[in-house]
Image (cartoon, rainbow, N blue to C red; front, side, top):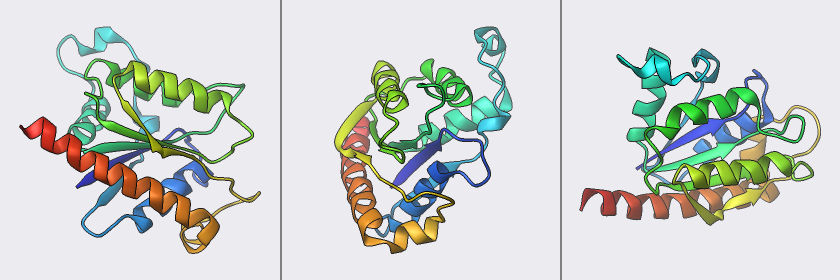
Length: 180
């Protein structure tokens, strides 16, 4: 069982990436959560680049998606929207689609809801199956937040663990349907 985790942030100390790394720590046994860290290696989306073959970074992202049973995303909001680099990554996935793959979303800044709402629309348009139980607000405290601290704080870990568990169950069902 494999979950692909996409952070919408390029920052080294990103709270969104910390949430996804905490999700990996909280995953049930036998479930691998892989955070995609090459967002900044993706070229600007241009369908002309796919004529012969997609660029290597795009191929890496698509390969990781193909091997995933579900997708977990966590993105910051900039200027009431999804960060451009994250939207760029999603644009590279439009051609392959999400194939009704279960999708969970964590909003690590619940006061900022514009990007979260927009992201839900984008992922649904990409044929992602947003899983209500795996779409959560996680009100992180201010300042730097370490993934281990998130995993060790019950008020944060419990909803994140439930999110990952729901996504895991849906991902197993999706994989069984895809294999049939």
